[in-house]
Length: 345
Picture 1: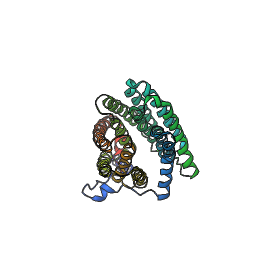
Picture 2 (picture 1 turned 90 degrees about the horizontal axis):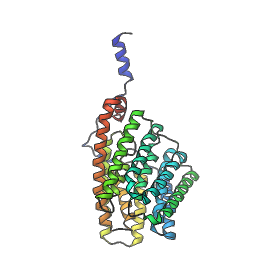
Picture 3 (picture 1 turned 30 degrees about the horizontal axis):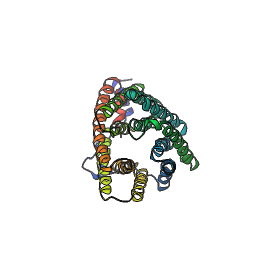
């Protein structure tokens, strides 16, 4: 076979380069896909908030947080990858959380171990539920979960997991999809960089930031969720959305509304998140920030949490982008095919 014919076949086998985005277009910033149907969004809200709200009325806010730590990743993970690929990681995050509460000095190492597991899980295309286990684990590093209440919170987390799996299974909305499995080089590179970032962010949160410093590693974990193509613009959209959501929560709290109105607004924020996050990363990030700040604001001043959320998210985005640049450099040397795949739309 001639060299020219070989080259033409290679050129045809190569994927087309991703079209250059139009950064001046409003559609580029606001539209990422299709909105989730209202029925599925409502089922998600029931699966995420149903048990935590009941636990809050019966046993108080700390136990409610535990239920939320199980229901949130249980719902999103089961909808995406199925209960079998989700439950082990949520249970692992609870066990890691208990270790963190009693051996807080080792929190950076525990977080790094969870992050490395998440990176390696990517080889099977199930990094999303594994990364969510890191997201919920960061709450155990905060003042929201006292060490003396650790067992209650972990038990509530298990209950929230079972509740969420039950709801999405009954309504037939579980999924068995997996992400495209990356190369071994990519999985290891991502795992090492993610583990390094979580360890660093956790140490900074414990030793330098305020009591709400857990937002720093939490935001880094959220920004590390797949898909990873168009990573930098996705991160920027989420930062802008976080700023909008924080400002909206601050303005609402400044009006000093009754608790019932705040609760309704937070639930509406979660519903909007489930409906709009697939449609728009920016608007979805604004909605989830608004809901989370109001939810956690039941325990601390909303203005303080809104500012902490915004600053720590910006710091998390900066760290994530720095790690991403390191990953690009490594892949450019070790696995150019994986890097080329990331550049596809």
